[in-house]
Length: 217
Image: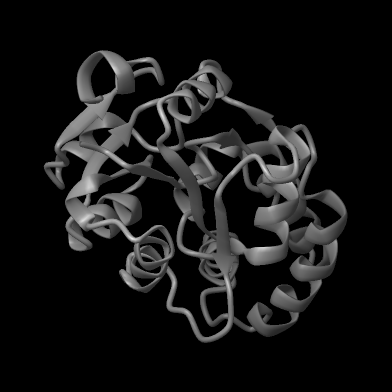
């Protein structure tokens, strides 16, 4: 029986692509580079903002990462201003979350987005206190796909891995959920395609949030 559900943020709960693209392009423009379109950004994100910027800079010609350090500092400042730019919940997500809560299933967010921005995104869209646990990238805690963040959530909820459902939209998420021994579902409404998810053989691949209830729970 599933007792808790852990969600990835970007591309799973919220469509944040415009905010990520907008801020990244502001950084690139500062160095006379870019812009990057949203389709490429879908493949740059997912492993933390430093890797996101590294990929974007490389794509735009800075293969030696000459601007990486400065771009990280600039991105941090700009993203604090623009992290909610045109952010919205995916269709069916509010109903999924309310259905989980009605069933007594606790809900958590585990993201590689900086922690303060993760909290800001979640609370702006769903309200403060709606989720039982929110965690973004924090000093001293390895990013996904390392299981450290998952283990913290399981300890907080006092549940075993087999009683936890993990949902995400990227290869990083599949590695995270499966590596931690969770019931893992890849979602196809996010930033990556079904083929990427299938390569990791998650327990489920779902095309819309309501399938959590019709197929999993």
